[in-house]
Image (cartoon, rainbow, N blue to C red; front, top):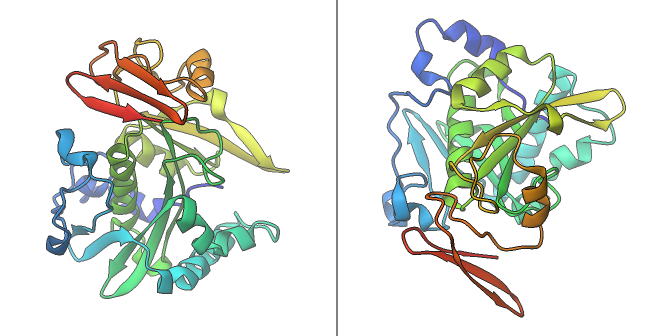
Length: 277
């Protein structure tokens, strides 16, 4: 439903750890697990095309996809954080605990410290039940939680930056998230990462719960009309994206070569490669 943040403690950390914030200027190294033998997501250019998820090491922390044996622990941590913050209600807690379901249709990332899971985040890049308000090509980031004793240590930052890079590596052109109005410190962190407010995406998923929309474009151009891509997006183009192939390359604005088949479509840019339905 919302992103929870270790925001107040991290706000106190700002004075001497600006690099640990969403500005992406962290000094921590981002490294791929050697055994994977694949480029790191977001590493630049066509190398990011590999769909396999990677481990990311940031100092003593590691961000990686959740393992099945960790589902219960991540679910319990998510419920604990939501309860402490007053964001939970009985009807929603089964969804918070159901990490296995999230992992089936989205990517659940965890942060590890000394062999312990200390944080988690979900990023949905291919639509599905965890991607409310998204259309094809958009990612939804949600359920960011950090263990209370790890707040202010940059765990939320590492998880969030990795989620954005997972969306980028999976070919998404926009990342969206929702946040409660009273999470003002978290809002400042989102803005440092590059997210901006999208009032047209404000919504109320449950009585008494108001959420504010934020978005981060990952490419400069709209794939449908070829015009500049704004955080709000273009309503007409978003509707078209549900059924129609991209007509323009979102990276360079070139007109794409589109081929429609009985089972889908492909759209090819001579410089940036092929996108498929």
